[in-house]
Image (cartoon, rainbow, N blue to C red; front, side, top):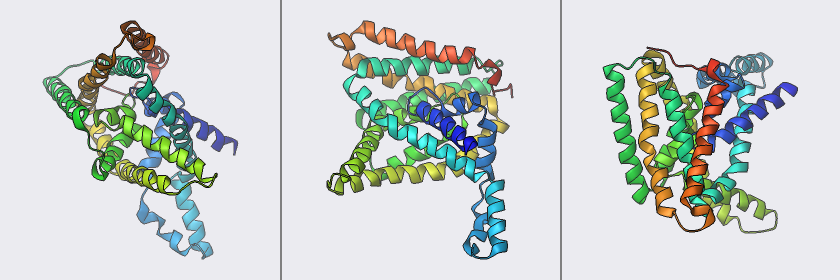
Length: 312
């Protein structure tokens, strides 16, 4: 139980990081020493090997089923997942209030986090080949176009929510790349933090005898996102992992360049909401951006031995 509690707390720290654009839960996994175990556990999951669970009433099948769960490290994944989920639920409401009530310091902080993360990750690419330059340019252009399109009219339909879940979960295996950052690119960050906050509030309101309708409405959106995340974890995550193994330098260059191109969104949000109030002033925006940059650079300074990129 003590080990599971430690894993849960490490998951909570990962979830807390994943709620903030520019901060990667996978980087936290590296820092707390569970990244390799996480990747092994995710890639070991094979539903075909769980068929013995259908006949769990049989003692031999039950032992085989439990042995399979142990080999796949399912208990570790469950404890970690509960920690991540707890942090996301606990902090999503806070982040939604921040982006809607205090957009200037919040988006300026995001800008600093993302910009500094891009600098740190670019620094891991010691050799710049023509292919890396080409994919970097492509990544910047794609992200700038996508963020511009989603900013002017992002869809929140089931297909887009499902896609957001598929893409965002990939950050779990990408140190330096944030799941919340992908939600920002797709124009779903503010919407999803709001929906999750309303879902939790609706569950609490049920205890006071309130209507079930708000829970069903927001819960449907959350469920669609979670289904996308589950599918993405066992499909897209494997694709990205293979890309990192075969073309790590080019893949990393493309992903980091997505971050650079997406800086358009927080910058435009800051400019659009600048005002004469104390929390909306240019000085506050500059200071919070500096704080965001400093936070990333400070973490990088004390985790340089955890770098995972190479020169392939």
